[in-house]
Image (cartoon, rainbow, N blue to C red; front, top):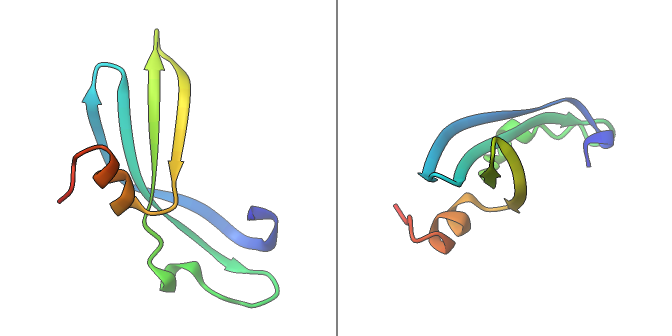
Length: 78
C-alpha cells in the first residue's frame, strides 16, 4: 500500500502498556495517493497494533484496521 503513497507516515497518538508482555499502539496513517491525490489525513484512519514482547524483543504482532475493534477485542472499550 505504501508504494502508491507520497509522504506516507505513521502517527502514533496513544501507547498503552497492557501488562508486562503486551503494548497496544493506536495510530493514524498519513499520506497522499500518487494517482488519486486522496489525502489520508481527511479520512480519519484509526488503526492499532498489539505488540507482544519477551526479553525486549517483539515475538508477535497483531495489526488492526480499526482501533475500536482492537479495544473491543482486548476488553478496553472506551
